[in-house]
Amino acid sequence: MTKFLIIYTHPYSGSFNHAVLEKVQEKLQRQGDTTDVIDLYRDEFNPTYDAEELKLFHAGQTHDPLVTQYLQKIKAAEALIIITPIWWNDIPGMLKGFIDKVMKEGPGLTHVVTKRGVQGTLTNIKKGYILTTSTSPTFYLRFFCGNAVKKVLIGATLKQLGIRHVQWTNFGGITNSTEGQRRLYLQSIDKKAF
Image (cartoon, rainbow, N blue to C red; front, side, top):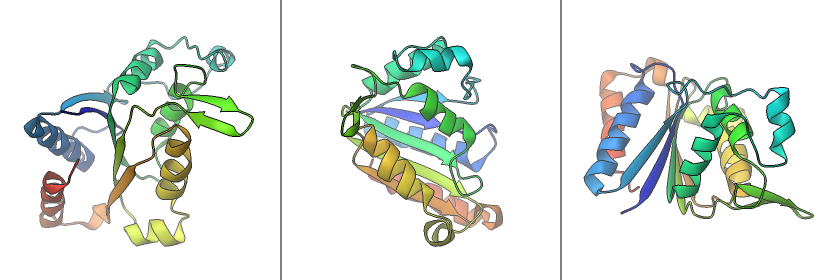
């Protein structure tokens, strides 16, 4: 049994991303895994820094109770699943703000800064999955838009936090997809090895 943390980033409960969330939860439940969900929009998480929050950053502190709650969930997780759309060729500002505010520097938090750079401490998370949707085709994101998810989010940010084994799956062309294509994608999630 694995303790999964799902970070879900979409404001509309009727979205295809929400259908992906439900399918992932069903699959993990059938497997006997435990899941905890951070739903950033439902929680009304404020992704922006204010001056007080920024002052507290280097001390590993916060005045936002959601940040404290989210940190506890991250430290308790053994696996991570991020479900998000890709907007303007990158992750939404809500998710970027979550990373900015929640990934706190300090012993026992998410990373420490050494002379050689950022040293991640989220080694409790042994595997990660990023499930995205995009209007653009996947090849366009990978080869013509800088491949932000693979190069920045996975290859730099999550790696710096100590999360090393991450897979990315994108359902591209969501806007023009058919109901049949969406159904097949949801079925593929059911077969995915989490």
